[in-house]
Length: 302
Image (cartoon, rainbow, N blue to C red; front, top):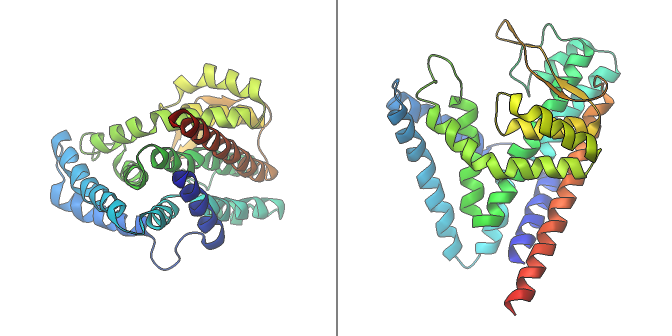
Protein backbone atom coordinates (compact mmCIF):
# COMPACT_ATOMS: atom_id res chain seq x y z
CA UNK A 1 0.00 0.00 0.00
CA UNK A 2 2.93 2.36 0.63
CA UNK A 3 3.94 1.86 -3.00
CA UNK A 4 0.52 2.97 -4.23
CA UNK A 5 0.52 5.96 -1.88
CA UNK A 6 3.97 6.96 -3.14
CA UNK A 7 2.76 6.78 -6.75
CA UNK A 8 -0.30 8.91 -5.98
CA UNK A 9 1.86 11.39 -4.05
CA UNK A 10 4.35 11.61 -6.95
CA UNK A 11 1.57 12.24 -9.47
CA UNK A 12 0.07 14.88 -7.18
CA UNK A 13 3.44 16.62 -6.86
CA UNK A 14 3.80 16.54 -10.62
CA UNK A 15 0.36 18.09 -11.14
CA UNK A 16 1.01 20.81 -8.55
CA UNK A 17 4.63 21.63 -9.34
CA UNK A 18 5.34 20.37 -12.84
CA UNK A 19 8.96 19.99 -13.89
CA UNK A 20 11.61 21.65 -11.74
CA UNK A 21 12.13 25.09 -13.28
CA UNK A 22 15.67 25.95 -12.25
CA UNK A 23 17.40 22.58 -12.36
CA UNK A 24 15.91 19.49 -13.90
CA UNK A 25 17.77 16.30 -12.90
CA UNK A 26 17.48 14.87 -16.41
CA UNK A 27 19.12 17.97 -17.89
CA UNK A 28 21.96 17.61 -15.40
CA UNK A 29 22.21 13.92 -16.21
CA UNK A 30 22.37 14.73 -19.91
CA UNK A 31 25.33 17.02 -19.30
CA UNK A 32 27.04 14.32 -17.28
CA UNK A 33 26.39 11.84 -20.10
CA UNK A 34 28.10 14.21 -22.55
CA UNK A 35 31.16 14.29 -20.27
CA UNK A 36 31.24 10.49 -20.03
CA UNK A 37 30.80 10.21 -23.80
CA UNK A 38 33.83 12.42 -24.41
CA UNK A 39 35.90 10.23 -22.09
CA UNK A 40 34.64 6.82 -23.21
CA UNK A 41 33.70 7.24 -26.84
CA UNK A 42 34.97 4.80 -29.40
CA UNK A 43 33.49 2.89 -32.32
CA UNK A 44 32.94 -0.09 -30.05
CA UNK A 45 30.00 -1.79 -28.36
CA UNK A 46 32.24 -2.50 -25.36
CA UNK A 47 32.94 1.18 -24.78
CA UNK A 48 29.22 1.86 -24.98
CA UNK A 49 28.54 -0.78 -22.34
CA UNK A 50 31.16 0.78 -20.05
CA UNK A 51 29.64 4.25 -20.54
CA UNK A 52 26.14 3.02 -19.70
CA UNK A 53 27.32 1.24 -16.56
CA UNK A 54 29.34 4.25 -15.39
CA UNK A 55 26.26 6.42 -15.66
CA UNK A 56 23.55 4.10 -14.34
CA UNK A 57 25.13 2.12 -11.52
CA UNK A 58 25.97 5.06 -9.19
CA UNK A 59 22.47 6.51 -9.43
CA UNK A 60 20.89 3.08 -8.93
CA UNK A 61 23.03 2.62 -5.81
CA UNK A 62 22.20 6.06 -4.41
CA UNK A 63 18.46 5.57 -4.91
CA UNK A 64 18.72 2.12 -3.30
CA UNK A 65 20.45 3.57 -0.24
CA UNK A 66 17.53 5.94 0.34
CA UNK A 67 15.47 2.88 1.31
CA UNK A 68 17.44 2.66 4.57
CA UNK A 69 16.58 6.18 5.75
CA UNK A 70 13.76 7.06 8.17
CA UNK A 71 12.03 9.07 5.44
CA UNK A 72 12.26 6.40 2.74
CA UNK A 73 8.58 6.70 1.79
CA UNK A 74 8.87 10.46 1.30
CA UNK A 75 12.04 10.09 -0.75
CA UNK A 76 10.36 7.43 -2.89
CA UNK A 77 7.57 9.84 -3.80
CA UNK A 78 10.04 12.64 -4.59
CA UNK A 79 12.24 10.40 -6.73
CA UNK A 80 9.27 9.12 -8.73
CA UNK A 81 8.01 12.71 -9.12
CA UNK A 82 11.37 13.65 -10.64
CA UNK A 83 11.22 10.62 -12.96
CA UNK A 84 7.80 11.32 -14.50
CA UNK A 85 6.58 14.10 -16.77
CA UNK A 86 2.78 13.98 -16.78
CA UNK A 87 2.06 17.70 -16.49
CA UNK A 88 4.95 18.72 -18.75
CA UNK A 89 3.61 16.51 -21.52
CA UNK A 90 0.53 18.71 -21.70
CA UNK A 91 2.49 21.92 -21.20
CA UNK A 92 4.65 21.14 -24.22
CA UNK A 93 1.91 19.93 -26.58
CA UNK A 94 -1.24 21.93 -25.76
CA UNK A 95 0.33 25.17 -27.11
CA UNK A 96 0.73 23.40 -30.48
CA UNK A 97 -3.03 22.88 -30.62
CA UNK A 98 -3.66 26.50 -29.58
CA UNK A 99 -1.47 27.79 -32.42
CA UNK A 100 -3.20 25.51 -34.92
CA UNK A 101 -6.66 26.65 -33.82
CA UNK A 102 -5.50 30.27 -34.13
CA UNK A 103 -4.40 29.58 -37.70
CA UNK A 104 -0.77 30.40 -36.91
CA UNK A 105 1.03 27.58 -38.73
CA UNK A 106 4.48 29.14 -38.26
CA UNK A 107 3.99 29.26 -34.50
CA UNK A 108 2.60 25.72 -34.47
CA UNK A 109 5.67 24.47 -36.36
CA UNK A 110 7.98 26.23 -33.93
CA UNK A 111 6.21 24.78 -30.90
CA UNK A 112 6.03 21.21 -32.19
CA UNK A 113 9.73 21.47 -33.07
CA UNK A 114 10.43 21.60 -29.33
CA UNK A 115 9.03 18.11 -28.79
CA UNK A 116 9.90 16.18 -31.98
CA UNK A 117 13.15 15.60 -33.85
CA UNK A 118 11.72 15.73 -37.39
CA UNK A 119 11.97 18.72 -39.74
CA UNK A 120 9.05 21.10 -39.18
CA UNK A 121 9.45 23.49 -42.13
CA UNK A 122 7.63 21.22 -44.66
CA UNK A 123 4.75 20.50 -42.27
CA UNK A 124 1.16 21.43 -43.02
CA UNK A 125 -1.44 21.73 -40.24
CA UNK A 126 -2.33 18.03 -40.21
CA UNK A 127 1.36 17.11 -40.15
CA UNK A 128 1.92 19.30 -37.10
CA UNK A 129 -1.07 17.78 -35.31
CA UNK A 130 0.11 14.29 -36.24
CA UNK A 131 3.60 14.93 -34.86
CA UNK A 132 2.20 16.28 -31.59
CA UNK A 133 -0.22 13.35 -31.13
CA UNK A 134 2.54 10.83 -31.87
CA UNK A 135 4.77 12.55 -29.30
CA UNK A 136 2.02 12.43 -26.66
CA UNK A 137 1.33 8.73 -27.22
CA UNK A 138 4.97 7.64 -27.21
CA UNK A 139 5.94 9.81 -24.25
CA UNK A 140 2.97 8.56 -22.28
CA UNK A 141 4.96 5.35 -21.95
CA UNK A 142 8.45 6.88 -21.70
CA UNK A 143 7.62 9.70 -19.29
CA UNK A 144 4.82 8.19 -17.19
CA UNK A 145 3.85 4.54 -17.38
CA UNK A 146 7.30 2.98 -17.75
CA UNK A 147 8.60 4.78 -14.66
CA UNK A 148 5.49 3.81 -12.67
CA UNK A 149 5.83 0.17 -13.75
CA UNK A 150 9.44 -0.16 -12.60
CA UNK A 151 8.74 1.78 -9.42
CA UNK A 152 5.95 -0.69 -8.60
CA UNK A 153 8.26 -3.64 -9.31
CA UNK A 154 11.53 -2.65 -7.60
CA UNK A 155 10.93 0.76 -6.03
CA UNK A 156 12.84 4.00 -6.55
CA UNK A 157 15.92 2.37 -8.17
CA UNK A 158 13.68 0.91 -10.86
CA UNK A 159 12.18 4.28 -11.75
CA UNK A 160 15.60 5.95 -11.74
CA UNK A 161 17.29 3.37 -13.95
CA UNK A 162 14.35 3.29 -16.37
CA UNK A 163 14.24 7.07 -16.84
CA UNK A 164 18.01 7.46 -17.12
CA UNK A 165 18.26 4.57 -19.59
CA UNK A 166 15.50 6.20 -21.63
CA UNK A 167 17.48 9.46 -21.63
CA UNK A 168 20.65 7.67 -22.81
CA UNK A 169 18.69 5.99 -25.59
CA UNK A 170 17.41 9.41 -26.71
CA UNK A 171 21.00 10.69 -26.76
CA UNK A 172 22.92 7.70 -28.14
CA UNK A 173 20.41 5.29 -29.62
CA UNK A 174 20.85 6.37 -33.23
CA UNK A 175 21.71 4.11 -36.15
CA UNK A 176 24.22 6.50 -37.68
CA UNK A 177 27.98 6.26 -38.13
CA UNK A 178 28.77 7.76 -34.73
CA UNK A 179 26.37 5.81 -32.52
CA UNK A 180 25.62 2.54 -34.36
CA UNK A 181 28.12 0.67 -32.16
CA UNK A 182 28.76 3.00 -29.23
CA UNK A 183 25.02 3.57 -28.68
CA UNK A 184 24.10 -0.11 -29.06
CA UNK A 185 24.11 -0.82 -25.31
CA UNK A 186 21.93 2.21 -24.46
CA UNK A 187 19.41 1.31 -27.16
CA UNK A 188 19.21 -2.39 -26.28
CA UNK A 189 18.98 -1.78 -22.53
CA UNK A 190 16.16 0.68 -23.09
CA UNK A 191 14.41 -1.88 -25.31
CA UNK A 192 14.63 -4.50 -22.55
CA UNK A 193 13.35 -2.17 -19.84
CA UNK A 194 10.50 -0.99 -22.05
CA UNK A 195 9.31 -4.37 -23.31
CA UNK A 196 6.65 -5.04 -20.66
CA UNK A 197 5.67 -1.43 -19.81
CA UNK A 198 5.15 -0.57 -23.47
CA UNK A 199 2.73 -3.44 -23.95
CA UNK A 200 0.86 -2.61 -20.77
CA UNK A 201 0.65 1.00 -21.94
CA UNK A 202 -0.69 -0.16 -25.31
CA UNK A 203 -3.27 -2.34 -23.57
CA UNK A 204 -4.41 0.52 -21.34
CA UNK A 205 -4.71 2.81 -24.38
CA UNK A 206 -6.87 0.17 -26.03
CA UNK A 207 -9.13 -0.23 -22.99
CA UNK A 208 -9.46 3.53 -22.55
CA UNK A 209 -10.69 4.22 -26.10
CA UNK A 210 -11.86 2.38 -29.22
CA UNK A 211 -10.79 -1.04 -27.98
CA UNK A 212 -11.43 -3.19 -31.05
CA UNK A 213 -9.82 -0.74 -33.43
CA UNK A 214 -6.82 -0.33 -31.11
CA UNK A 215 -6.22 -4.06 -30.75
CA UNK A 216 -6.60 -4.61 -34.50
CA UNK A 217 -4.08 -1.86 -35.30
CA UNK A 218 -1.67 -3.11 -32.64
CA UNK A 219 -1.77 -6.64 -34.05
CA UNK A 220 -1.44 -5.58 -37.70
CA UNK A 221 0.94 -2.61 -37.53
CA UNK A 222 3.21 -2.73 -34.48
CA UNK A 223 5.83 -5.07 -35.96
CA UNK A 224 6.42 -2.84 -38.97
CA UNK A 225 7.42 0.17 -36.84
CA UNK A 226 11.15 0.82 -36.42
CA UNK A 227 11.01 0.59 -32.62
CA UNK A 228 9.83 -2.73 -31.11
CA UNK A 229 8.29 -0.93 -28.14
CA UNK A 230 7.04 2.32 -29.65
CA UNK A 231 5.21 0.29 -32.31
CA UNK A 232 2.62 -1.28 -29.97
CA UNK A 233 2.20 1.95 -28.00
CA UNK A 234 1.61 4.18 -31.00
CA UNK A 235 -0.40 1.71 -33.07
CA UNK A 236 -2.75 1.00 -30.16
CA UNK A 237 -2.98 4.68 -29.27
CA UNK A 238 -3.73 5.73 -32.83
CA UNK A 239 -6.36 3.02 -33.19
CA UNK A 240 -7.90 3.91 -29.84
CA UNK A 241 -8.31 7.52 -30.99
CA UNK A 242 -9.55 6.53 -34.46
CA UNK A 243 -6.71 8.42 -36.14
CA UNK A 244 -4.31 7.77 -39.02
CA UNK A 245 -0.76 8.41 -37.81
CA UNK A 246 2.67 7.40 -39.09
CA UNK A 247 3.41 7.79 -42.80
CA UNK A 248 6.08 9.94 -44.48
CA UNK A 249 8.03 12.51 -42.44
CA UNK A 250 11.13 14.63 -43.02
CA UNK A 251 14.24 14.04 -40.88
CA UNK A 252 17.44 16.05 -41.39
CA UNK A 253 16.46 16.96 -44.91
CA UNK A 254 15.50 13.45 -45.98
CA UNK A 255 11.98 12.11 -46.46
CA UNK A 256 11.49 8.87 -44.52
CA UNK A 257 8.72 6.49 -45.52
CA UNK A 258 7.29 5.36 -42.21
CA UNK A 259 4.61 2.64 -41.96
CA UNK A 260 1.02 3.70 -41.25
CA UNK A 261 -0.31 3.61 -37.71
CA UNK A 262 -3.92 3.50 -36.61
CA UNK A 263 -7.03 3.72 -38.75
CA UNK A 264 -9.34 6.64 -39.35
CA UNK A 265 -9.05 10.30 -40.27
CA UNK A 266 -6.06 12.60 -40.25
CA UNK A 267 -5.50 14.34 -36.89
CA UNK A 268 -6.32 17.98 -36.24
CA UNK A 269 -5.64 20.46 -33.44
CA UNK A 270 -8.33 19.04 -31.15
CA UNK A 271 -6.82 15.57 -31.27
CA UNK A 272 -3.82 16.69 -29.21
CA UNK A 273 -6.16 17.21 -26.27
CA UNK A 274 -7.87 13.90 -27.02
CA UNK A 275 -4.51 12.11 -26.86
CA UNK A 276 -3.75 13.74 -23.51
CA UNK A 277 -7.14 12.69 -22.17
CA UNK A 278 -6.47 9.12 -23.36
CA UNK A 279 -3.36 9.13 -21.16
CA UNK A 280 -5.39 10.44 -18.21
CA UNK A 281 -7.93 7.64 -18.57
CA UNK A 282 -5.15 5.09 -18.96
CA UNK A 283 -3.52 6.38 -15.80
CA UNK A 284 -6.76 5.83 -13.88
CA UNK A 285 -6.81 2.26 -15.21
CA UNK A 286 -3.23 1.70 -14.00
CA UNK A 287 -4.02 3.07 -10.53
CA UNK A 288 -7.16 0.95 -10.26
CA UNK A 289 -5.29 -2.22 -11.30
CA UNK A 290 -2.43 -1.46 -8.88
CA UNK A 291 -4.88 -0.89 -6.03
CA UNK A 292 -6.76 -4.09 -6.83
CA UNK A 293 -3.54 -6.07 -7.10
CA UNK A 294 -2.26 -4.78 -3.77
CA UNK A 295 -5.51 -5.65 -2.03
CA UNK A 296 -5.43 -9.18 -3.47
CA UNK A 297 -1.83 -9.71 -2.37
CA UNK A 298 -2.53 -8.42 1.13
CA UNK A 299 -5.56 -10.68 1.45
CA UNK A 300 -3.55 -13.68 0.22
CA UNK A 301 -0.75 -13.00 2.73
CA UNK A 302 -3.07 -12.79 5.72
